[in-house]
Image (tube, rainbow, N blue to C red; front, side):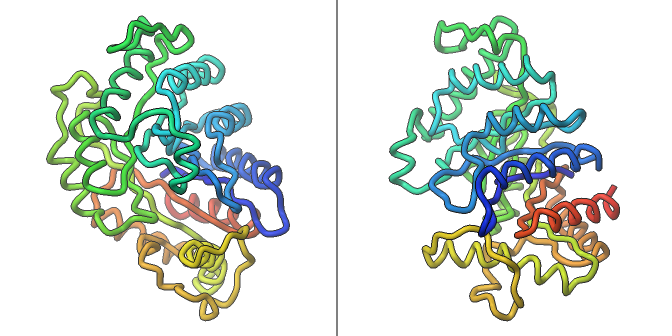
Length: 322
């Protein structure tokens, strides 16, 4: 059981407040026993402060002791692969062997912002080649596999690489590269079953990039746990309002919870993969999702207007799941 954090900014708060709340939650997750904490790269958003993922990872690693910390993910089209290798190699040298690198082919933003950020190709062949080079830089010699360039700070760090995806295309790439697959089912539920099947069907260890011996799926799920179902449903309206804003093009920070009946589009199909309610309700919903997918690991996403509500949700989830 792991956590994905987009470092949300609530109405009336600042990015500084959002980052501080994120680090407080990181320390709590570390104490509660969650497996890993990942930060997701986003740009040109009013309500999210997760843009510079490596800086967030470093700060979270500095204030925790046990939990793995990483990117879920670095959107590779926005970055030079060599720079990613050097940054994540530096993280390992600073914080030890608990750093993960999840890579995505999407830019994590709109087209205009993507053009302003673009540094590498998102084409499947180029994406695979970039991973091949990254593994070379993380290897014992620190040498790119197709480029005779040394990344001394990355040498020998062997940073684990994951492939992120929301479709069958990303799943096929992850399988063909022999890498673990992180499925963005928490906002892209349409191809879940096909993506997992195609990942497992395409999985091979007979390639230079293979990192694991058998398929490994981590699936995303929205989670909000409160003392009662009604209380959780009300708090969850912060997220349903955010998704309604996305659909309507409204740009604002996270909103306070309201009566669920007052949220337009509260049945947004993008939020199908969610577990919301009391501890017993959430445990049942999550168990049903695991039974459906056969996921090896769940990565939970929790938005709350009040950071204290999020931390209580994490506590209740840990109490009922671990």
